[in-house]
Amino acid sequence: MNLINGLPAHVLLVHVVVVLVPLTALALVASALWPPAARRLGVLLPLLAFVSLASVPLTTHAGEWLEAHVESNALVRRHTELGDGLLPWALGLFVLAAVVWWTGRRAGAGSPGAASAGVVEGDGAGTATRWAAAPVRIVVAVLSLAVAVGAVVDVYRIGDSGAKAAWHDGFSKSASRSGDGD
Image (cartoon, rainbow, N blue to C red; front, side, top):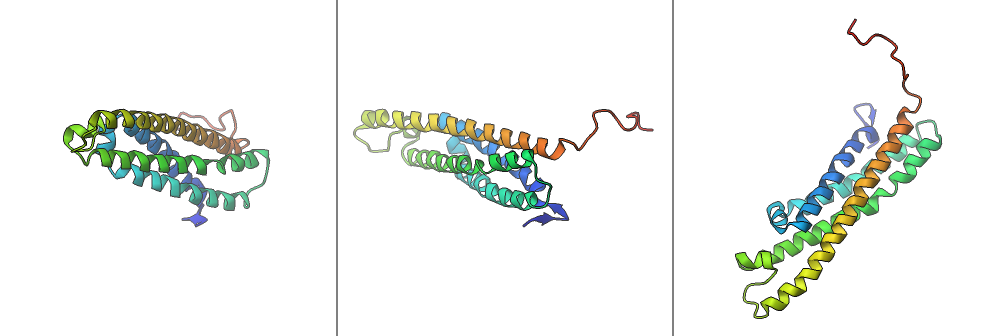
């Protein structure tokens, strides 16, 4: 898919990435830090992360096609290089979203109080299980926060470089006609 309604697909697909990756990052961090959010989102969290992940190579592929159809310069090459680095971040978001969903699902399998304490119903070693679950939750939360920040920063850097590549000589700093509606 290189053209959509006569326009380069990249300029349309990029909006999917720009919206979904930060949205996924926000949902992941909220779910990792606040288990009720994870339970409320349920399977929507890994599904959102999967769609985000799938949109990255589609957008990158369309961008490579577009790169072959525009004049090459340092700004375009820089944007292309940065764009190639988003896939690992999106993969990290997906893996962590699956982990957060899975652990929230397992915690929710027990009694209502067990979900918040990390204890499975009928577990005689409830205190030990709770203490064992705490380090895992902390590690997952820290990793989620780090990957989310990395992904959002990378999306920003890629978008900024793309805007510079597209608009560096594409407009005049002074108005060509009056802005009063004449």
